[in-house]
Length: 352
Ligand code: SAM
Ligand code: SF4
Image (cartoon, rainbow, N blue to C red; front, side, top):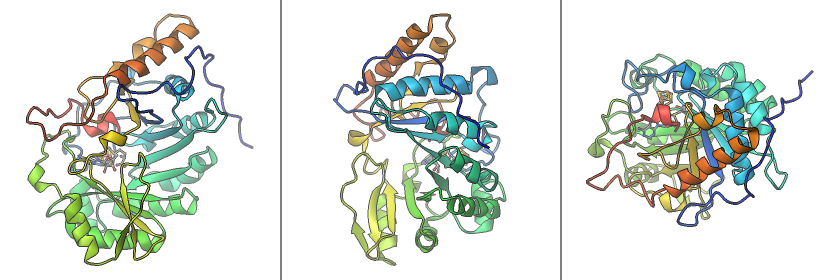
């Protein structure tokens, strides 16, 4: 017997829908929520071997608080929520979080689409419960198919478990299963074709991501980054690629592989930024709203949530936080500007 979803905190006294618009007139519909900054892997492009200074538990939002921030966002125009981290499946009540977020509805009465980005290690146990809680699909990180290389790259010998997690997501019907790989020079760039074959043969969607200056160890070096152009050159040596039109606000540019229907995508955040089409906001595990992965500023929701104000004023405070965050959104990430500064938070604490 399934238990009914708990109700969201009372409310809302939020402004009308469609108001999440930045100063360039771009409407924002997508909220990425980090459930934790902790992780079971230590991918070299993300964290140093010893990890990073973790967020204090007391600063992290409770599930009630996450649902509250999300509910106000949905009333303002958020339609899609992606759960991330760190490793979101390390959060002990992740199934409950999904159940409560999927119970939210947009002002038009449509359900909110909730998906998840994960390293897959806990998917054998969680894929079916997550699907039953309303999760629509998963993105899984898989940078190599070679066990020794996987152990070196993630600093954990977990390729077999990762592949089992991907298979579990597929078996649970969390489709489409998307596979993310960060392409790195001299590390896994020789596997671009093999990873794509692996995905195409199983009906998964392969996505390559250009490495970004977001690692906790501050080791990013532009000359070591594998660009979209190089990735496509390798792919074109093995497959016929045909561009898929109509990218919209999606970060990945897509190509049909050998006539389709399989696709391969590249997220060229550095060499061909898609900032002009970005409709994403981010909420960190400690309750900070960010307009961009590369933002230098954040807007706090935690103090608003934990204030003694009456519920309608808390809702208004959260709506104001969303608007303040959007007002500070820049036109682009400026990685190529000589004054560019890597954000203080690493990717794992922002939520990728
Ligand atoms: N732990 C989960 C995972 O790995 O899928 C979710 C969090 S992880 C930070 C989200 C995504 O960010 C992953 O696809 C990962 O490959 C990507 N990522 C992490 N560091 C990156 C970097 N420096 N450049 C580009 N992508 C990065
Ligand atoms: Fe963990 Fe994901 Fe970062 Fe890898 S990319 S260390 S799995 S948070």
